[in-house]
Length: 196
Length: 249
Image (cartoon, rainbow over all chains, first blue to last red; front, side, top):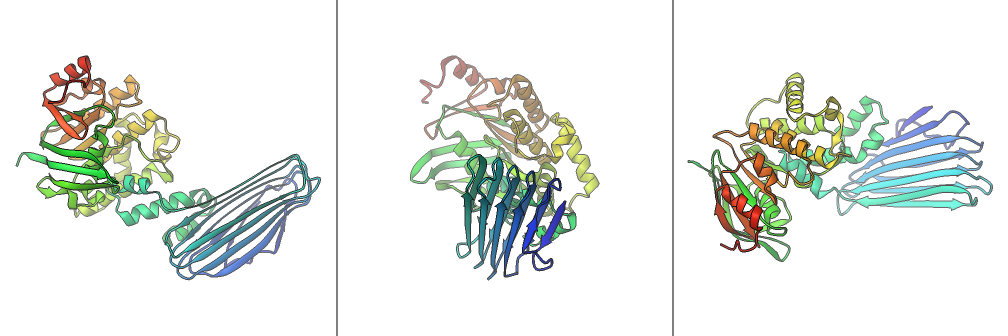
C-alpha cells in the first residue's frame, strides 16, 4: 500500500502500524517556504511485516524543519528501509532525527536507513541524527548519513555541453532527489522541480 | 581568417604547480591536430584550459578562438561558440536521463544563437538519428547520463553528444583509452564523419592506434608542459618506434 503525505497539506498520523503482507510504502514531501516539525512513529509489531519509507525536504529562506521518525521493530522477521533526502539554502535549518529500535527477540530484522543532505549556502544548516537501538543479536541493520554540496565535476561537465550554470544546478538537484522523485505522481514531481 | 584557434605563450597552473609552461599552437579551419606525449605532460590540462575548467588558472598568454578571447568566456559560452570536449573521464549524473540532458544542452545552444528551441518531435528525430549513428540501443535515451555505463559506453556516449551538438571545434581527450577495436572504429567513424573544411579538432592520445583511424594533419609532442616537436603524420610512426625519449626539439 502506498501512502503519500505532502507536509502542510496532509495530516501526518502520529503512528503507522504495519500489517503483514501489505508492504507499506510511506512517502513524505516537504516543499520550501514552510516551517514545521513532523513527528511520527512506524510500528512493526507482527512477524513478516515490510515497510519502505522515503522522503524529501526542501528548505529555503528562514525555514525551520525537523523530522522525527521513530521506527520500531517489535517483532522479528520484519524489514524496513528508509531513505531521506534533504536540501537547505539561505538561512534554513533542517533536522532529521531517525531512530531505529529493534526490540529484544526481534530476530532476523533487516533495517536500513539512509539520510543524505545537500547544503546549498554557507548560512544554511542540515543536521542528521541517525540512531540505532538494537536489543536483538541476529539482525542486519545499517545507517548512513552524508552532508555534501553540489558536485563541481558534474557542474563543469554540464556547462561544457552548453547548459547554463543555473540550469546545471537545477539538474544536479533533480539528480540528487531522483530516488525519491521516482515515487511521486507526475504532478507532484513537476511541482517539486518547479521549486528547485 | 583561416586560423580557428591561436594559442600564444600559454602558461597554466593547478594550485601552485605550473603544468603548461608556454604553449604556442595554431589550428586552421579544417585541420585535425594530434597532441601526443607521455603521462603528466599536460595534455589533459590543455583540454581543460580550452574548455574553461574552473580549477585551472591561466597565468600568462592568450587564446583566440574564431577571433574571440576564449579565456574571457564561461564554459557554456565556449560550448555555444562550437567547442566540444570528449572527456577522458565522463561524469555520471544519476537521475538525469540522456534525453533530458541533451534537450537542455541542444536548446541552450539554440537559444544562445537566437534560434527557437526544437519542438519535441524534432528533438526526438535528431536524438534517434544520432543514436543510430553511434550504434546505441533504443533504451539508451532513457538511461541516466553515464550511470552504470561501461568504459566503452561512456566514450561512445561522448561521441554521441558530439554528434548531437555538431561542434566546430572538437577536443578528444584520450577517447581511445579503454576501448576495444570495434568501439574504437565506431568512435573514429563518428569523428571522421564530422570532418569538414570548416571544422577542426585536437586528438589527444598516448598511442598510434587511434591515429590509424583518425588521420591527423599535424602532430605535436607535448612534454613537461611544452610542445617539443611538431611534424606531419610521419611523426606518429617515429614515436611508435622510438617512444618519446630523445624528442626534446
